[in-house]
Image (tube, rainbow, N blue to C red; front, side, top):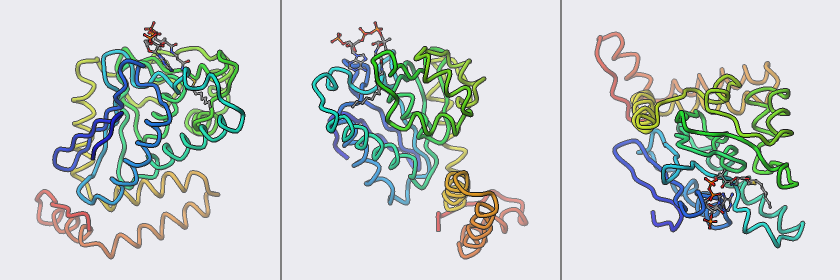
Length: 260
Ligand code: CO8
């Protein structure tokens, strides 16, 4: 995969995607967003991938937001289109059929915070700072922030972050509930890798369907979510992996899942 603003590396079942515009603190312009969508559409059918880590290049930033310089001359229609482009990219990341871990190494502001929120799990360096500072620019979060943040932390905490535009420490965001773990900076990628390896060792179809049940079920009435959960559970009984998982348990050995 060849991209100008993204670096992709893959080892065994784990992919690592680095947003790579360090000169602009990895800010998201049209090109990054299009490349993210292209990337997600390419990788989604790669059966070899079982977990993806997303991080930012350089020491300072995960992603410092949408590219503010690119917004200067936008018409209302262009702004709406830009927002839709970002939402398409983040929806594509969110619906990947394997776990996506954000390894937030520094500033995750505006679109950067919203990118992290489209990942399944957020690990943050002690140095990370999160915020939705759009109101400081006379704008509102439009890459999913007003929708994903309240679903993650509840309306009251989301309102505080969105209305104040302040930056928050990783620890505060862990308290808010959308950062899973705060990690010393030098261990962030190792910890993300370890978690990705753990997830990659589990049944890949089971993880994919569990993700579907969690993410789409969250939007449904509980009775419909439960119905979907039962259906997805039933579907796993036509996989060879479930035979392998149960046999391995009974035979007291490690399972070797094939993802089918
Ligand atoms: N866009 C473009 N360039 C950026 C951005 C950005 N979001 N953030 C930083 N940069 C650039 C700086 O301009 C600077 O470039 P140069 O050296 O050429 O001047 C370089 O990156 C380094 O940045 P700083 O010198 O500012 O570094 P500091 O350590 O002093 O500060 C900060 C770091 C605090 C992260 C600071 O750069 C900052 O506040 N950045 C902006 C953060 C922000 O407000 N992000 C939210 C943007 S809005 C958004 O994401 C969603 C809105 C959607 C709108 C869609 C419209 C259509």
